[in-house]
Length: 446
Image 1 (tube, rainbow, N blue to C red):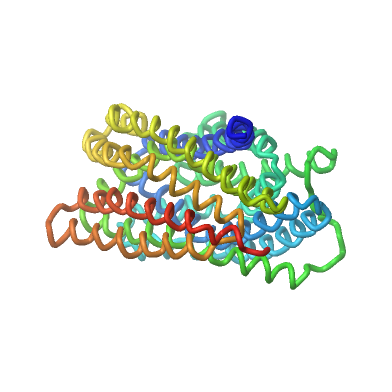
Image 2 (cartoon, one colour; image 1 turned 30 degrees about the horizontal axis):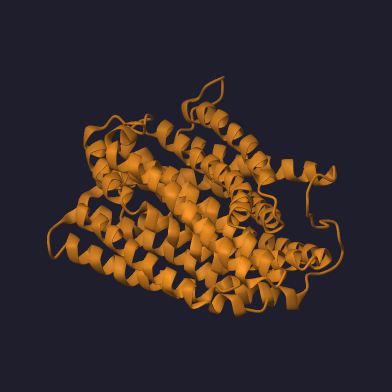
């Protein structure tokens, strides 16, 4: 059974890995082009802060999407396709309504984040231009997230991959065009990068609508239905999704605090090096995200079939493969950190600091793969509270505690902050494995 199950996991995971690679490629293209536009410390910091605000607002969206996925995957496993579609429709209505005020906040009040971080005037101005460019299109990013989630819950990871290929091609072209002012278009710099990324979500949404109109989607909502959203269903989505949203929010809040600490410890150069390190490392994350999606889908569907042992085996197989691929990616970070950093900037100081970050984080990649994939499997069961508690305690307690202690009282500065990340990743991965082994996730009703 393991060989067959491994094939099923890979069938789901590989397109999801490619989708996430494409999404990461989108961020890398931003970083590579902005790292060669104007002052790289300002442009890279601006895009990093703008991206941080985007991710500060997205945890609620993705948390509720997680709740919807758990329900849809369970109904799909039960072969109750009508209820799965009904869940999709309610998730769509709920998240689009939530996205509109968030979009308006980003466009009109996006300047508040770089100001709160204590960034200098040049970084604040550049950050706000990036934020305005991307947040105009925020509802389309949510539309894309809902459709991608529904496709994957139904076991189709190939369609999101195809859509992402087109969207990323769009992003690369318009990045090159709008950042530098090519082909007769105005030179918009950082704002051009935001517009290119944001408009790629609009483009992807249009592709989904065309595919839906042609009957090419495995599951689709009735967007023209006059029926109102079902309050009972939305409450269920909230019940499962809010812990997942809080968990994702902790990542965003920790990122916010880490940014403050990095600026405090080493200023824009330190933060720019952190951004370069993150961009390079983001490629290594991709196997974990892909196998996590596979675990989420299969655990939900197999529990819908009332086959707990198969659900457990699917999560374990996905985790093993995630650790293997993450280990390979991590080895490149350990042995070639300087070459990876040089892809993003020519600044010698930024390259040196980013190389230290990549060396440390490369050693944590297998543990990170296990952490992400096991948590994904439990979320697929609708078991979202304990993964939230584990991540909340690890990120906000252990990670920040070690980082602050090493960076300031012990005088290690920026390297101490990164060592806090290094140590905490192993602690949290062990805890997540122990929680999965307890098996309480298999008893959740959705």
